Length: 371
Image (cartoon, rainbow, N blue to C red; front, side, top):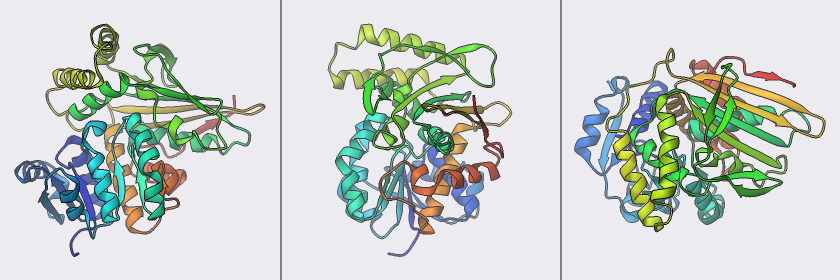
């Protein structure tokens, strides 16, 4: 089949447009696909970097057969359609049917675990990459963790994300559902559950004061490292430097009273409704002077310790570049591992850190010190 080798499915959303922007900077043509050609054309015109860049728009029904027909003959699909656990299994099935690599922007760890358990072996058998959460969350923590694990003897990872960006509507619905479903950490090679609606005071390397953080689904890292012989323990917390974060903590506390006793379907409907109320409009593009990020890892072993800090900016824009960089490497045949993988493990941590540094999203030098 002729035409672009890349499909951005659900490209009309906030994150989809950011990946399309960075693909244009790499000179990589793509198909912007979704359920409404009219909306896709409108949203793509809002991306100035796409002026004179070759791309196609495809309207497609949201079902396995229709998507497989669109994906056949391509090489990679990046999926943005969430909440993923509610909407996107047919996209993964279609990628498997069509024989293409799969990436997505999810933050939902129950989705990540389901893909690992249900589809990981099938993708591996076909030599295909299955890499959910190929985004700032949950790859930045893996990038920092891999640098920590370069220190011999490290087997315990304590990871903290800090950002200051507003969330998109789709992200808001996803994070609310993931914070109200089981959230895991890794303790002595076993997954254990964080309590619901409980915040923790943390110290961000850039701040003298402490601020509240949440498990935020527990992060993808405990799942990526669950069967990694290097790692015994992995905990992830996430904090945001915005007033809304305090409001979110209260929402989660109220959810336990108002909705925990309901069915799974009713709870999912509740988080969708709350998400729509919280965010009614797409946020503006991030700017580095305002929207900064810190990813911190404290690594421990029996006799070893290390702290890794990655200073960056614009978490959503990092996702845009990560998506484009992962796609570029797939097209170049530069995949280190296939099957179910963290994208960082599939392409190499130092490679991705360098790409983000060259584009100005990370500091050139990652801070590493013993403690």
